[in-house]
Image (cartoon, rainbow, N blue to C red; front, side):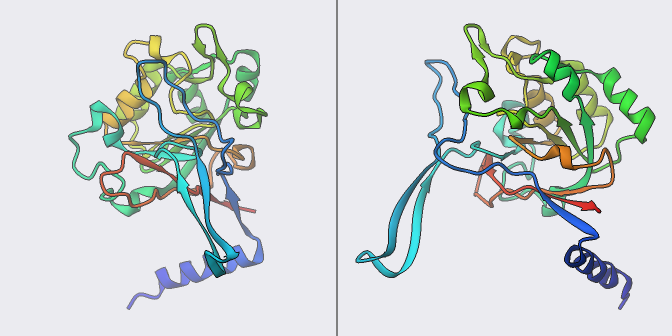
Length: 263
């Protein structure tokens, strides 16, 4: 038996224990106040997160504490599977229970656009910006997660985070041609953002509508939304682990996203 892979795993565990490999939590807390997408009538909305105590060391259960939870699949830090969107519904292995598990883990490419977003909440990442990033950091590798750092997760309160105005939400996202480029010209796992969804707030007015969902899931790729702590990741060198719950025919799920980062 080849011992090299076993040695690599042993070194990884030792590195985490020693602190030479940092584990960064990219997940927001999941609680009743967690912001969720609110679609206009007559479209249906998911339920917000709720926690109901079953027992807490009392007559209902004297020695144990546990809860029922209620929420939509796309609540808090969550995973978008290809089956979530019309364009991805016919792919094999497109739901949370049957996506090959190795596709949840990959290197992270972090694009920092915080300055542009501070100046313009409707900022859109373009293909030219991605290619400029590649000129400095190398081509986005196959099987990578492309994460867009906006620092949007630092906004306090649902109103400021969702940033809904009279004409709808105003949050950053992807230019349609950029996301088409990432979905079809780069062999990525998917994209990750700090906003409530992977598309820009005004993406309902784009052509096509909601291009990140349309192109990513149409290409059998994934989305990660409501990430945080992207400011703790380098442009390259981190590894992201993002497995959703194994919900049969699930379109997505809340999840705990972790990054392994060389210290």
